[in-house]
Length: 175
Ligand code: HEM
Image (cartoon, rainbow, N blue to C red):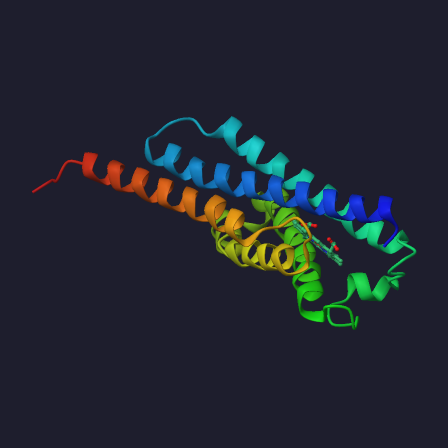
């Protein structure tokens, strides 16, 4: 890869992942706020716009791959899973991740039309998107480190688990 393009692919991929990560964390936090009967409107707007920006950065990520002269991918190798001989499985995880992210964003914007219950079921599939892009970054990345990823991903799980447990204890038992 040409040096500038290579930096851009890494930077756009890393920032896209970071935005998606923050969006997931904030999305989980809104569930806690909801249980505590706090207002979540602004937090949800922030959650949505973080995902929008993750998509813009991912489109940039794919765009730089298309113009990169060193790897010289064809459009179908970057946009259709399993059409490339270069790391086919990690590439497919990224491509499916891109479409998944698009589906999530489009269905979220159209949630009133789709119906809240149906949309919630679709939204509940999002952990798959997150696992796909995490594996993609881990398998393809230059900067992505397994230990750092494990810490940043397991840490919040423990934190939210503890918060939920604390909230459960507060609920009075009704006989
Ligand atoms: C069309 C879909 C995609 C394709 C074809 C693609 C392709 C690539 C390639 C070739 C690399 C390797 C760059 C290097 O050599 O360091 C890479 C890295 C990476 N990609 Fe993607 N990707 C796609 C979608 C995504 C998505 C949806 C995300 C996250 C939201 C993402 C996040 C990352 C990350 C975090 C890295 C590692 C950066 C680093 O540590 O160097 N990618 N991707």
